[in-house]
Length: 302
Image 1: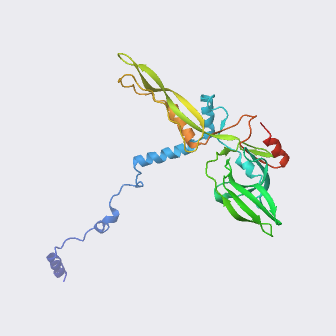
Image 2 (image 1 turned 120 degrees about the horizontal axis):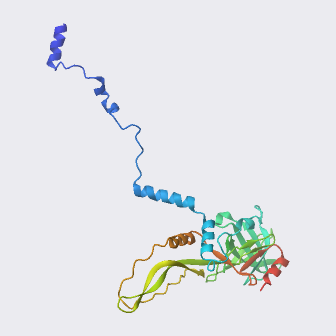
Image 3 (image 1 turned 90 degrees about the vertical axis):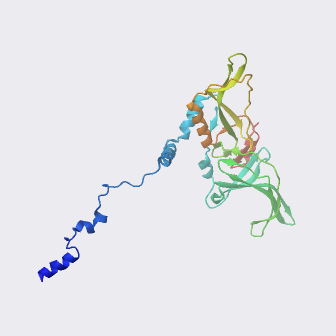
């Protein structure tokens, strides 16, 4: 019987039984020990690292302090943080706060300041421009403004009629075209929040020089030996164009210097919104007051 089995095995090759490792070969192949996760492409990896580094290093207060020290005349009085938290602390969470409003166009009118975080601004201001009583029914004309680090009172108005329960119903709307400048919140005390800051545009440019040509004449070349700042009050949708000096010879300019201050200051003013408060003695662009006497005193400033 044993011989028969050997004979049968011989017919099919009578090969010895394959070792176990042949069966388990796919699972026991020799992979690299502790395989690393898939590598991030180097360009993407560098970009992520740079973004994280920028976010970690972005201390705009320190950068603005550096810029004000570097260009003290151009950036004198410039700030980028408004005391919004102090203004929000005025207003109860559950009801509007009565205030008095004064701007260059509004002379101490009553209003209400309410928390409206769902509308993209910390607070909402309602100003009563006119109020009357017709046939025993109170009527008023109001306008509104989102309020936070800035205040921009709308040129549009609503005509409202008071209901028997004291609420108001809008019965007419007046729309006026035109732009009203934003005013920056510059200071908050117990009695007044002043919106007398001007939003600014800060443009940094490389210096240019008039260089002599080989034979005769001169040419205007950007050398970037220095960085100049141009600070101007922001005009919505308008930016000034730089002047262009024409060359009197075709000779090419030498390469400009690699000035690291240029990128640094441009990055700063791309990231922050800068404003400068008016000097004392000028009329306020806008103010919110807790009492009528404080409003009248503030509005009388010249």
